Length: 367
Ligand code: AOF
Ligand code: ZN
Image (cartoon, rainbow, N blue to C red; front, side):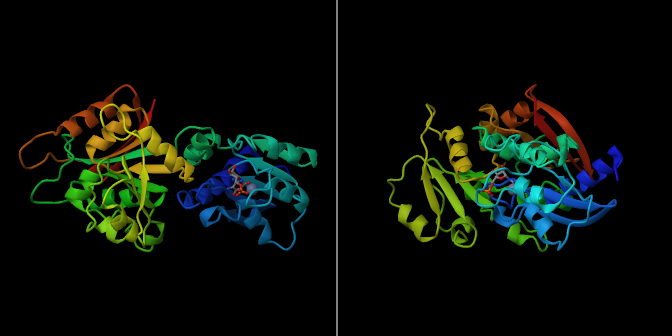
């Protein structure tokens, strides 16, 4: 039976939604969704496993004893053509008896890029490319940049009063409401690493966990940018480093405190500095890319976030804004001033604005 375009986008949307569930959990692999459809009914599905294995197609196929005649596979990414840590999905699909494979987007990995489709075509299987492509590309944005020699996807989370101030008042430690903060935890859950500057560690002593009910396992790697190794060994991040991995980037490994960090399970990595004496952030991202991180979330402070922006290293900004002004005296730190200016510059275009009760989330994309 021939499916209409409407059915194609329905099932592909389903596959992409499945893929989005494991974004941030699949290591260096992209998260992929696969849906098997027979007679307009979903008969199986798969998502790339936690850590990157098994691949989505393998998972979907292995749930079925027999593939009904005429079955169509919907995949959010071109099936892979090579044997890596996992078998080649294009070959698995070719041998499975599937009639047709509908693909949202080509695999940007140069090793695959079109070769998976070739394998399917050579095996006489019908293929269709480009269904819901933009949506599918969004999910693998960081992977796509990384496998093509660029840095991982870098996103910034900002929480401010309506006047752009990011420093909480004395009366209430929270600038934004519960809904915004839950959304912030969703962002933590779908990134591979969260990055903060040492000043944030010293003033807030954050733990950077994903605290949504039942989602603690989704806490990402934690990273501190600490040029002069000032992170307190007594900080929550260091104390919990054996449970939740922590990396500190610094300019010099020759430091008396190195062993204290290491004994606490912290990985300390040396990075070169720039003329201004601060760490080269491009270098930091290269090292995170080598670790296989596809998506990195910068959680402040505003000076560090501004540095990433000034170096043109940011892809998206998630700006949570309260409807209220700060109750106490009204002042923007230099960090806040440059952060506000950089996000509002022509380098960024607003992509979405979401109402969160008394708050608003504005999502900006690099132009
Ligand atoms: C798929 N389905 O679910 C994913 C794919 O080392 P391997 O064998 O795990 O292969 C990694 C590459 O496979 C990865 O770089 C990306 O190009 C692709 N990911 N492909 O067919 C999947 N996650
Ligand atoms: Zn595969």
